[in-house]
Image 1 (tube, rainbow, N blue to C red):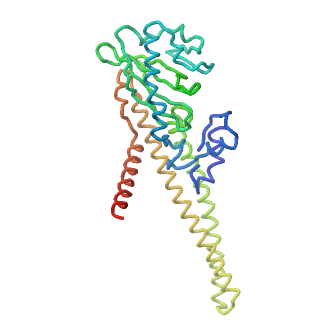
Image 2: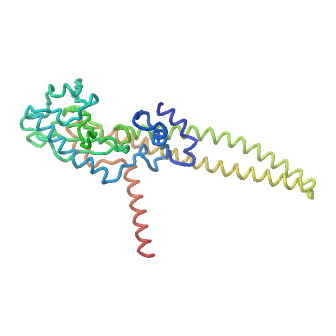
Image 3: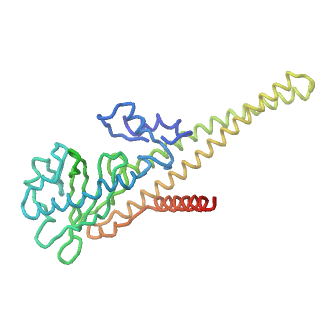
Length: 325
């Protein structure tokens, strides 16, 4: 099922609850569980496909061993050792550089152009995120030459094997190539922002259609109310006329309430689309030549900064209220 198809299923629910979408099939999950897990189709207020990160302890469970895995790989590559020992023993494991993509059985036959004499791996990752699905982790490391300049970048995806984190995919990027900053993701690196753009666009399209239909119905209900009021004015003592006016007025009020909810939802969706497009632009602007990769450290989108500030303010308010209570 495509992302758009999932979106079509989720849009009506988005009026009431936050729901996810993902195009990746996860065969190890029960279908019903997967649908629930992937229909978190909200306005960016929470959840895996809205970019919510796992708890810090869960991130550390992947982040802490990752530098050791990378160093073991680099040492093996530099000394002519067994590079594949750092990878999961899987047909899905790959090593890539330029136009070459090597499967697991071919990894030890490759030559890593960054693992040469005089170069060293910076143990501190430029970027590191654990998937919101908890399945994988994604990190980026710089390789420095003898002068401390960036010689290249490793873009690495990790997955557990028998409880131990190993490389699933490793892409070797030379200094002249470009590197896209790793960001918080759900199922696959880079999936959140495109999803947020698409889901917000789908919600806007849906809500605009619903508003147009609801406005047409409101005009008809207002006309019925006007007709009922005319009959009541002609015969004000007739109870049937009074009841008809009351029913018609209730319908108009409910329709107006529904329209207000739809318009509020549209406003939120438009704001979500604006922020998601802004995120995409900021990520594109930070897609840098590898030689400038050190600038990726600490990069956050404006949306992420705003969210952190809001959460900090809410926490401070709660602590102040507790202290005064």
